Length: 86
Image (tube, rainbow, N blue to C red; front, side, top):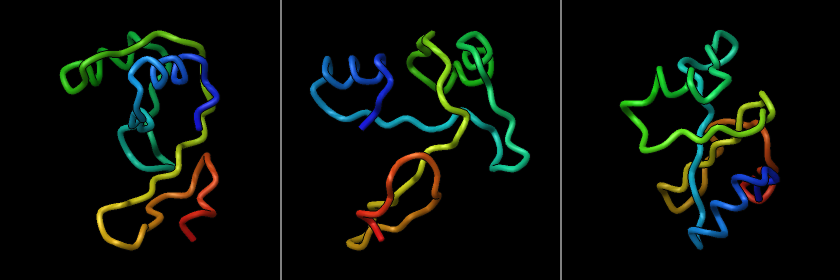
């Protein structure tokens, strides 16, 4: 569950979950990260529907879980508890 007020408002307003990924161009440790809505829009604007200016969030990448198959697979460990999928 997100703790960011903007994310929570979007989830409540939409009435469903949203998917967000880290705005990095390459995997760590060489990841180029973008901080600030204008920089994100300049780089990714043609690929996304919207960029929202908000407060800074943790630089820790999110966890990614694949639910493509019957058995969930942890793709990347990061922020968030993945214990349910182990």
